[in-house]
Structure formats: C-alpha cells, structure tokens
Length: 518
Image 1 (cartoon, rainbow, N blue to C red):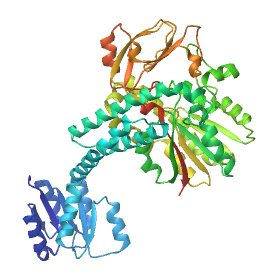
Image 2: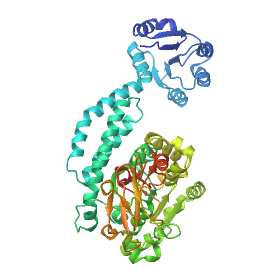
Image 3: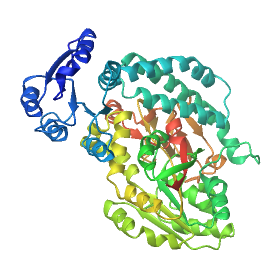
Image 4: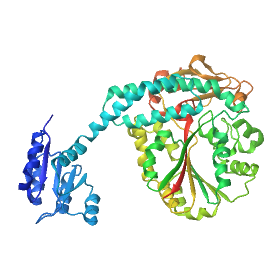
C-alpha cells in the first residue's frame, strides 16, 4: 500500500515503543514527539494521514495543541488519548471535532482499529455496500419482473432508494452503472403498471387501490384529527421526493421520533396544479371544476393555478363534518417562512394548521433555468445534497424545532416528486398546447403512440377538457417532450434537468411521515 504517515504526540512516548513497532510492522510510518509545541512545524513539513494526541501533557496541553492542529490542518483526523474519564474533558475534545477518543491504557489493536476506522472508512463502507447490493441485485430484479401490486411497488422503490443512497457516494463506477440500469428497468416496468391500472384506480368501487392525492386527507389525515385532541400541523413540502426525505430524515430526527412512515401515489399529471388541488379538495380535477368552478384555474387561463387551496380545504372539512379551528399558510419566500417561524407557537391554538412550503418546487424549476443551480445539482446525489443544505438553513427547520417543543402532532408530506430526464420524445402540438415537458394537453397532439401514455378522453382519468377534442399525453420513466423544431438544441438543453408531470417512481411514490416531538 502507499505510505501512510502517522504522527503520535505523547509526553511518555518512550513507553509506547511497542505500539509504534506494531504499527510499523503493519506497514505504517510513525513519527513521534513528546511536546505539543513541536506539532505545528511537523504538520507543515510532512503530510500526515492521522494524528494521535495525548490530552494531558506538560507545557502545551492536548486540547491547546488540537486548536493549533485545526488551524493548520482542519480536516486531519485526530484521535485524542487520555488517562482521564472526566465528562467535561470528553465534551471539550468531542466539541473540538476529533475523530476518535481513547482511554489509557490502550492496546495496539485499539490503535490499529482507530487507524482503519478513520483512514479506511470510505473504502470499507464501499466494499460493504457493493457486496450488499450484489447480494440483493437478483432478488430485486426478480421482484421487478414479477406481477407487483401497488403496495409491493412501494417496497421495491424503498429498496432502490436505500441502495441509491448507499452506493451514491462511492467511486465504483461499475456497480453504480449496474444500479442505474436496474433502476431504469424498474421505472420502465412501473410505468407500464401504472398505465394498466390507473383508470381502474380512479373508477373502480373497491378498496384494492392505493391512497391517491384526492383520497390522502380522507384516508390519512382525518383519522388523526378524529383520534387526537392535540393540534395537528400538516406540512406539505412541495416537490419532495422520497429519497430527499431520507436525506433530510437525520436532521428531522434531532427533534422528532418517526411515529410512522408510509407512501401514497400522486395523481396524473404529477404537478402542483393537479395533485395539490386534489389533495386539499379531496376531489379529482374534473370534479373540482364541476362542483367549484370558481376555484379551478385551467391550463390556458391566467392566474396562479393553486390560489384557492384554502377555500377547497374549507369545503372539504365542511363536507366531512369537521367543525374545527384551522389555518392555511403558504410559504413562497424566505421572509414569509421567517415570519411564520416567529409566530408558530400561536398556531397551536388551532385544531389543524396546514403549511405549504414551496421552496423545493422553486429549486426544481430553477434547476432548468439557472446555470449556477445546474452546476450545483448536476446529478441525483448533488440534488439531494442541495436540498439538505437548503433545509438546514431554512426557516422550515426552525419551524420544526419550535414544534418539537409543543404538544402537537406533526405530519410531513408532499404533492409530487420530480425525475431527472434523459431521453427526448418528439411531439407536435398547436400554439395552445401547454409547456410542461412531462405531459401535454391539446387538441392536435401528434406523437409516436408507443413512446407515451395517451389518454384520448380526459374524463376517463377525471381531468378537465379544454375542448371537445382535447387529449393528454404523458411521458414515462425519464423521457421528456421536445418539439421537432430545434429538436437537438432543446434535447441538449433540458437533458439531465429535473422535471415532473409524468409517470415515474420518483414523481408518483410520495412520502407521508407522522412525527412526535422528543
């Protein structure tokens, strides 16, 4: 192996010669000093991979030395070694961002384990993840090729997300390519499954169908409202994919225990205008248009498509006999989120508080339009990382932290996801055709029927008709629509962007999380 240099600092370094010889026999090079004051110059002159540092030394103490180490080499792994088991010393060391903490007397194997844990962690994790996925590959493949129902598809998707997160940070291009191919196969099979069953889910009078956008509150939220006397906070983060939720979960769990984690299916089109209106109305879009025409804004009409969510929610609560105090809050900017965070405790006087947080949806759209965002979110892992970075610095995190201190019930969910598109599909439409890249509605659509999921009669899937001859076309898996005019330009421009509105695991299988404050 390439030379790995260790620096060991201890005022009793002579007593540690057996340990040092043990490490040298294992192939490591070990430099030593009995004084913390010599460490800064040694770090500047040599590229050490790890530092073992005695906490109790005359002159410059271990903690004082550690501060200088962090100034010179902030990312150098430091293992603190001490005779003391005092909690305050441990807290000072851990608070200074050390990599490990050992209590004297230490044996050689402890030292070796600490070295491997800190230097080979990524390699060992990579090997373990690769082996684990290889063992699961055939089983997942068999499940995908089987006749899965809507519940089984949730479980397959959970497994795929798990392995995507496990493999996502690895440098092993081979196993990553194998996973990518399996996920694409799953998305293709899932798309066919949705096409074959979607109309029946909407029309069949049976319980053998998934919870969909328009049944979400009835099936999931309303039982909670009936069973608890606590205020309920229903927080919908727009365009939050399941893998993004799993990335945020560790931060959320600093404040909450996860009481339950489940999934539901977005309706089509899997976009805000349709899916979120369906959630808060408890109705499919064509039913909203007929029953509440004043609250429906069509594709070609001017105005915000989701400006009447509060009114639709009020009508839904009334229909189901909920005579309760409720609030509806929509966050479209940082400042609005900040003001909501400042008054969040006041909302605990209501029985139900709905908060719609739009940032991730704006981030997704910006991913297409802004070159800076394109560079920041060039792939799935970067998109998740960007979401996590936003969340950690957003008012939404502060809102959740405040709610954790209240005796309330908190629910996190979303209205649709997004998919990273790869393959352009040609389509022709008139000037009235909508601009979304994952679905089209128009009266003169022309496309290869084998490449899309077409619905000639929108009423079959409870969608409004613009004209008597309007029809819908949906993209599958990671396809996107492009017009023949300037086809190559737009195909290149939109490739690898995150879009929504069509049929894919990422867009349609959505998280629904119930939280309890710690």
